[in-house]
Image (cartoon, rainbow, N blue to C red; front, side, top):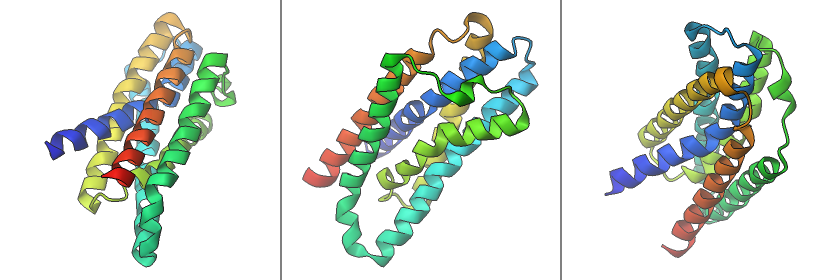
Length: 194
C-alpha cells in the first residue's frame, strides 16, 4: 500500500508540476507547427530535465538542513503547505484570468528553451520540502517519475499545440494549481496530524 501511495503521489506531483510546461509546450507547438518529432523530444526533454533536477536539488537542500537542525523538520509540513498553496494558488488565479507568461511568447531557440525550462520548473524546487522524509533512493525515483510524467505531458502539449493552439493553456494552469493545492493540504494533514 505504501508503494502505491508513493507512486500515486509522485505521479500526481509530476502532473501538477508539469502543467506550466504543458502550457508552454502548447505555445511552442503553435509557434513551430512543422516541428519534427526529434525536436519535440528535445523540447520535452529539456522540460523533463528541469522538472527532475529542481525537486532533487530541493530535497538535497532540505535534507541537509534538517540533518543539521533536527527541530526544523516539524516545520516542513507548514512550509510545504504555504509554498504549494502559494504556487498552486498563483497557477489557479493565472488560469482563471487567462494570463500568459512571457516565456510562452519566446521563439523556441536553445536559449529561450532553457529559460522556459527554468521558469516552468522553479516551483518544483519547493517539492524538496514535500519529499524530505524520503530516502535518497526514493527521492531519486520520485524525481524520475516527475520527469517521465513531464515528458509525456509536454509531448502531448506539443502535439496539441501544433493542432489546436493554446486554447487549453488556461485549463492546464487551473488543473495544475488545484493539484498542487490538494497535495499541499494532504502533506500538511499527514505531517501534522499523523
